[in-house]
Length: 172
Image (cartoon, rainbow, N blue to C red):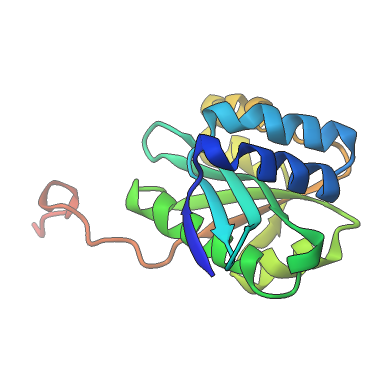
């Protein structure tokens, strides 16, 4: 299994997997979101695309990561593609300076909920976006397009880099 950036050549496989994995509305937004996704990753098996992940990086201080869609071909589920995709997205988000990554999962999607929770994501109330980021958090939430039946999850990085010299308080 190889995780790599998606290319235009992967579009047909991604559309097929989205349609097999989601209802019509989610599949529509997954395909529509391909144009602006970052990171946009695929899990490549020996002969085909096994899954994909679309993320969104909300710029700002600090940047905010959002795993928008993760889908795995029904024939490839349970083989680690989803886990590998999310782990690579976490690495990429962290490399861009995020200290938190969010994901939204339908309440009834136990496999996805288990995957995210096994990778350190925790369930949080939607109001944390306001509490942590104020007006910016509300704008981010509106762009996330959270459905009422989705649970918001967050993964906070605990391996934060050391503070820069300007941030270290001086002893008086």
